[in-house]
Image 1 (spheres, rainbow, N blue to C red):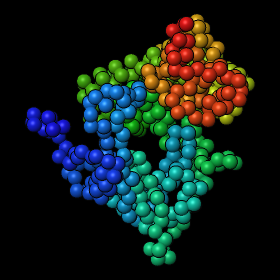
Image 2 (cartoon, rainbow, N blue to C red):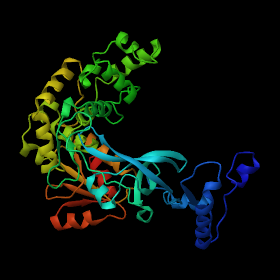
Image 3 (cartoon, helix red, strand yellow):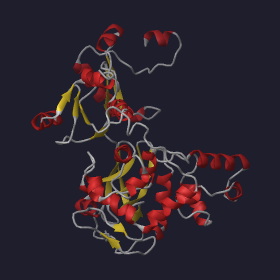
Amino acid sequence: LAWARAAGLPVDPHSRRATSIEDVLAYVREWSAQREALPYGTDGIVIKVDSLDQQAELGATSQAPRWAIAYKFPAEQAETRVRDITVHVGRTGALTPVADLEPVRVSGVIVRHATLHNEDEMRRKDVRIGDHVIVQRAGEVIPEVVRVLTEKRTGDERPFAMPATCPVCGSPVERKPGEAVARCTGGAICPAQVLERLIHFGSRDALNIDGVGPKLLQQLLDRELIRDPADLFRLTKAQVLTLERMADKSADNVIAAIDRSRRPTLARLIYSLGIRHVGLHVAEVLAQHFGDLDRLAHASFEEIRDVPGIGPTIAQSVVEFFKQRATRALLRRLEAAGVRPEAPSALSKGRLSGKTFVFTGTLERFSRREAAERVAALGGAVTDSVSARTSYLVAGADAGSKLERARKLGVTVLDEPGLIRLLEGQ
């Protein structure tokens, strides 16, 4: 840093060399108190070994150097008042209470809304309209209500009751036993769910349709140019040009982005459908196992449940989704529009086909995600939990309770060199 400073490069003027852990802790305390005085936002402090030789000796994992750590400051909090409580409807129909706040600056951002998560959490914190509350940005991103300042109550505050019908479409609201979330039953007739499903369909981990975001989708819905994801693939440039702030080049880009998304991987297409409990990882597991969307759509509960890493809850959700008439119609329309998923090529011919892997601990040569991709490329399946059906547990440094469970079940345990030999066919 001294050399960089002497060379005229911009260097943080507040960096300091510490000779003991006490020096480090003192520095952390100092800037925890003073960070708001800086002319830029900061969420933590980086602590490094001040020796290039020692850095080289310590090395790094695939995810981070061993010679540096980051201390994160506690989330900044602020006091404000709840003006109202409204309800947001998500793509699966989930109703989320949201506190509408008097604007307050938190971590450099003006916050006007904060999630209350669900009815049970709202009741537990006893958040009422008119309350003075403490808010923070969870992970420095999502605003949430931390607690109520009950000592500031005047008696005029009003409890909020979750609605019995959807605030958007008026359909009945259902809350199943054992679940914290109430849901709108409107499905495809609920405009809020339709919009959120379209947003999810084109999101980065789904079909990744660049430039087709919430505002453009809302315009398309308002003008009745689309009703579901399949309609996106029938849009013409002339139709897109009718939208606000849409020029010739922009319309070309939108149509091109939609066209590029016609050949997604099978996992991305499964994920894009927005099936409850099916995140990207589960979608990858299902894609690897079934290899074809039609096979998955017609699979029985037992066939899906018995896929390593799936289980009854996900299986029931998948079966119910593909039973719906609207789902079958959507799949036919997507196929007619030229959406053709690319099936996993290694499904039937990979030498690890039929083998199930679980990872625990830290690997040296590559990240766990990279290792999982290598296994999948050879036809193997990767799951999160150890069971009697697990073929191999790959144990890196600092392996956790999965290692003990694997040994009890008699599952073959591989260290990293053993995994590498297996991947290389030795």
